[in-house]
Image 1 (cartoon, rainbow, N blue to C red):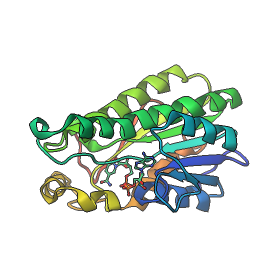
Image 2: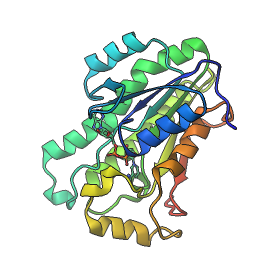
Image 3: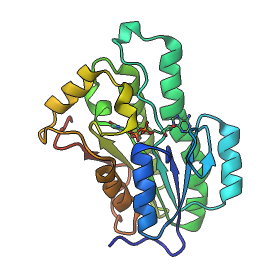
Image 4: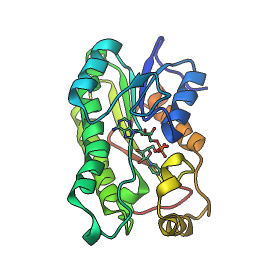
Length: 230
Ligand SMILES: NC(=O)c1ccc[n+]([C@@H]2O[C@H](COP(=O)([O-])OP(=O)(O)OC[C@H]3O[C@@H](n4cnc5c(N)ncnc54)[C@H](O)[C@@H]3O)[C@@H](O)[C@H]2O)c1
């Protein structure tokens, strides 16, 4: 059984779907008060993570958040880099990178003030591997890894720990629009020869959000069925 500080509140972006929804359920099952935020219907709070004013206003409404899970994200264009439009590239970065940055910037100071906090940012094995046909996604998730490494070091002595989970392909609505060739490649590179389930990712996110975590920050945890790329 994982434990969390008494009365802990978690904010899960992208919480209306897939991995975010599984994280919200997992944390809630553990007794954490969970607020989901998503641009799609079905979350507790409607939020566009790319909108700085909306993020600031959510912080004002919610007050202190002890656990931040940044799961909002998009897969972006499935095309060779030379065929990717600048606006599709920028949109992928706006959501995956700017969104993660804005949420961390808004909520980490409250955690530092409280002397305890957990940030879990969702990246991807694609960030380490550089999936062909997914340059925008891969590069944006590499940025998520790097910003988390910086943040983790910046707050290392404050009680706030910030880490990354890097899943391989997971059975979620995100992959409904992913090029089947990219999914087949991912599966062929995965020793367990299957996709992950959102609940399996949520298990690791819950551990990284709990008091069990004490000596890791700025670290990247693969949840990838053995798929590895260093
Ligand atoms: N599914 C996979 O194979 C996989 C693999 C590795 C990493 N990831 C990462 O895990 C995270 C969750 O993915 P998922 O599989 O649950 O995808 P998903 O599509 O099921 O859920 C993503 C959620 O993010 C929300 N979102 C998108 N843009 C938003 C915005 N501007 N503001 C707020 N919310 C927004 C969507 O509405 C959706 O509910 C993503 O960051 C993704 O890149 C997924």
